[in-house]
Length: 214
Ligand code: GRF
Image (cartoon, rainbow, N blue to C red; front, side, top):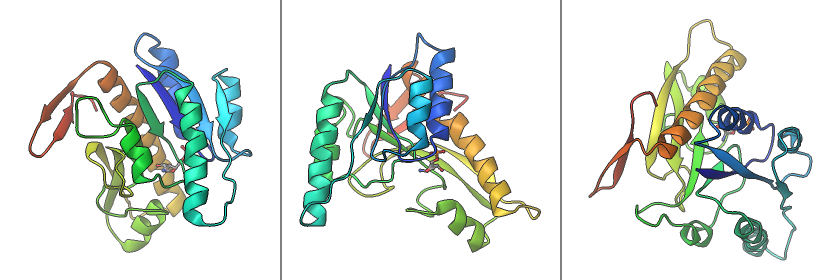
């Protein structure tokens, strides 16, 4: 299964997926890494792993929508040069338009071919700074979600979730570290399950359940 990874920053999820692909070359191949941020750490990781990498900068146009459309047009150009099954967002700090998401719809399922990882148990704590908001809210359990990307932010159909406890002794940094560890394992396991075709789906409403171990 071929994936393109989109990331904007540190790239720890990208690194984890690259490591998984290295361990399971017959199942998973990272065919490209794309960033909107020319200074992103993730570019160094891409180069270390000799994965084709692309910077698609955001170039300001006369209004926000034009800026977004111009950026997505160049992103589509890059994606069309690669052969891929899934685009995986991994800390990609851009909201995608409905047109962009619709362009990459799944051939069989009523979802897009774009996945995202979000550091909360969706639908709780959608949006930015989810670790911080969960930690400050007083909840005792938060978590991590991998979902299909839809045109609404952090609202697509859920593929997998895992709880992450917030302990009485935690600092925010401890809690985030624990969560990141879960992110790295969960995203990789979801990709391996998809590659292994370990899923059951049900319709009306569409739901997907991945195999044991995810
Ligand atoms: C992760 O917490 C991810 O869930 C969120 O952004 C962060 C990216 O971290 N969407 P990294 O760049 O993968 O280290």
